[in-house]
Length: 360
Image 1 (cartoon, rainbow, N blue to C red):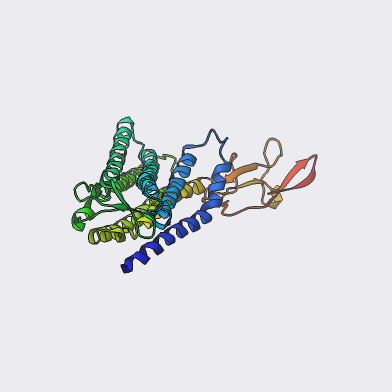
Image 2 (tube, helix red, strand yellow; image 1 turned 135 degrees about the vertical axis):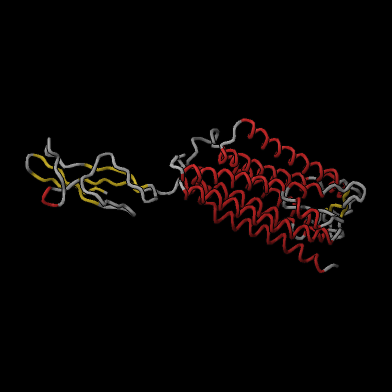
């Protein structure tokens, strides 16, 4: 038995454990997103994509586990497990493609929104994602048309020497699932085409917004909001590219099941990072805000009275998490800054009698 056999098992277990741990950490944010939906039949696009990218990734991991760890694919009784393996061995590659496609959809929609792409740009980016997805499923199904029942009773994929096109999967997308006899130098340069296109377009879109804002044109975005978009994109790209490079090293060196030692880990992190892209942006947009109400005091208490009615000036506003103060009336006293939750006291006047009401 190769020493990598145990490592392959442990890495699959670790991948599922990390996925479940991340799911538990982000579950409160996921629940908050569900609660903000109008109904189960009218979910937002972001909510639907979160469900797809997270739970298709989970299904891909579970099918990977069953195929590798199950012991019911044995050759007794006659031909029954063999037939079961023949029916099952394509399930995991197909589910991996589905999880990858969900990630594509997340970044296509997100990039179109960031870059304000018109119809032509949207169609071009969608066409690129469709071509990438088609190549992925073709490479997976065409290369893995052989299978075998392992000695421990599990269902294993076998590579075809004559029909192995699995390298096309890495040519357009990461993370990989299997490859044999490839040149690492060639595929390390081309394996992240789709992600590179997304990162370049994201950088360009955010740079344009930054330049427009520096010229005094307010497009409605803030530096903090753009930072959230950029940081989440770079984190996703860095993590998936890291596992892509590691996988390619294993696939270039091994031609058997040892090559898939990090395959499940790649699936887990791609799904996790894609889900976090959605949840981080949702958490930022719906971050808690502070509302407040400030009224003027009496003239001898640093307040100012209306010259016409004798009623103190009222100032109302909202604090949206940044150092901004929005008032619906002009304050005579300058230098009012609100940086945290403010509790004030409102004074109103009626026939010369002061009534004190607490306001938060």
